[in-house]
Image (tube, rainbow, N blue to C red; front, side):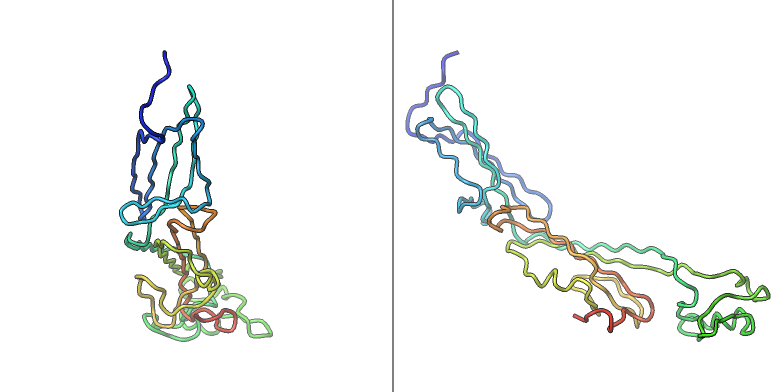
Length: 237
């Protein structure tokens, strides 16, 4: 088969496509044909960019194929911005905790009208020499003999959002900080409880070298127990 003949000047655009993803990410690909003498591939990490839907996309991939004295160059640009709506996730579960840490172990509070000690029978609660709970006696009332723990409700809240600029270091610097109310739409928790930021995940969906493109950020917070996170151990935002 004879080699194709192109008339006119190079490069010749032969195809292009645009794809839109969740969280505001955009991917644009364009293929041009060059003569081998005029081929220009560009460089990932350079200022080469594309503008799609008013968004500046960074060059993230280059594909080069040579054949019959010609070069086919496909460039892929990625990016986006923060136009995608934020997404919030809540996960509720239970976790085993020492029974002595229960909010109503010694006093009634809220929906707990009878303290656990009183329910078991005050004389049936055993402590060591330092006053630390050890066990319930065999004669404990209401089935408390042998009980050492209870299932405490745990709540985790995730805020997922996007940005078109490099996230500030403050996002990660505040991991393990206490928050009264995180940004976004966290669930309402009982009085006395608060939140601890326990992780941040940042993914660059654009150009890794130039720190441009679109960033997807996931912040995760964990609700405290009834007494709140200890302000002497963790910083407060």
